[in-house]
Image (cartoon, rainbow, N blue to C red):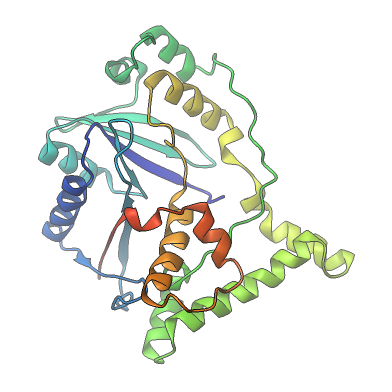
Length: 282
């Protein structure tokens, strides 16, 4: 999985106002919208900052926003919509939940306790934050995810592809094909030395950070908070890859699927119900 994970949760029943608020706030802050997916204009060259988000369909009284957002934008989003925003983040270094409201950000259990689910107690939340509530170990031997689509390429490579008038989809497929060779070595292709090198290169993606101490505490806290059932999945990368293929298939239904496309679509079958919010500035 990815090295970092970020999500916002807003207690709302409609996702459209969240996407609209994010768009207006980013525009006001000097960002410009772009569309890197099939049928869009691609990623503008020379962007120094990019914010790439998906607003998920509402579920269980929550709207989830997938992707990393600056704290200042989260503050403004809470103020504009008039609701508290629960921010969750996890990396190899740390992770946790914070409540953002009225221009303040609190990470202590007492501040988050106002969002405890019915039937749960603030003391249970305190114990979750302290790592005193056990959670099961998750499978950490998942195959690495190969990113699909133009947006999966590094920004500098995206710019070169566009400057050279190379077909973005072909460039992305080539990137996927190259990654696929590495995955075959990981799964058993090639000699022993090649397999060892491939495994070493992919080791970071094999590790499941949700089994870290911070990840366990967050999973325990999510149970006490009563978040939506799919509060941590799908990951942003899975939605991005699925959205890329679903939109391509929507435009060209007869287009032959490439290796990995079917799996990406199956991972997030409702990807087109997610609203992309892609902005950048130079």
